[in-house]
Image (tube, rainbow, N blue to C red; front, side, top):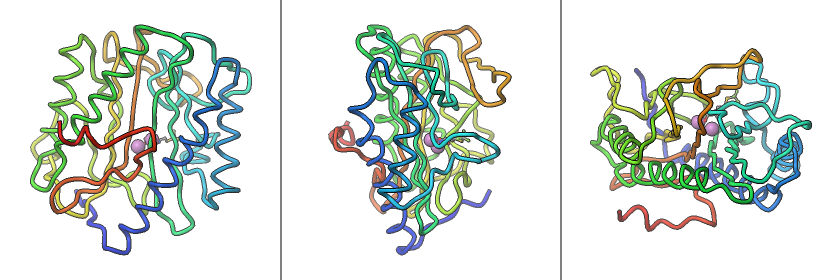
Length: 263
Ligand code: MF3
Ligand code: CO
Ligand code: CO
């Protein structure tokens, strides 16, 4: 495992990439309402990333992925493919995952949940999943093992009756979309994979939490990952920088505040 430590110059470029990814989610939020298709959500984000930000949507053509963003509705865990025929309806929950690659060549990766209209179960799942993200971010600082963050996520999810997806993970990020280390969100670390955080590392935390069983399968389109038992799934993601004393949330949005870091 070779975990890159970013230079001061690279950190500035990561800050810009993170701000850009956050700005896409801020831009699209008012558009995500019942009746819009996931294809249209994707088109608006794609156009904004290229025309307003002067950047590239990293998912497009990544290992053959066909679209600029991932839109994952209800029992879709991740990597849902945007589709003009798929309209959001009242009671749906959707994860929108944005990764921009700046002209400087650095990546910002972030995702959030949208609850369309009302869904009591979906709203609770989305909230607990965001708490899993926030509680683990609050622990990030040099010297901490990845498994400590993972245990926090697993504990919070399972104590609320949910399960943690094991088939997909967080990752280092920088000039590469997916760099070392792999960040498992549950306590399944081989000792050699349980990296210790150090100042200057950038990585994502992106827990996927299911109402039912943790098992997933990928549909025949080769991308769409769903829960095997068709239960609801939620995910939130931030790109983080490990600082000397803690963490900087590179993809922080205007609707968030940092009070969770004191938790
Ligand atoms: N953004 C996703 C992540 O958090 C990766 C999407 S890859 C794609 O790592 F090809 F599905 F777009
Ligand atoms: Co990611
Ligand atoms: Co992502």
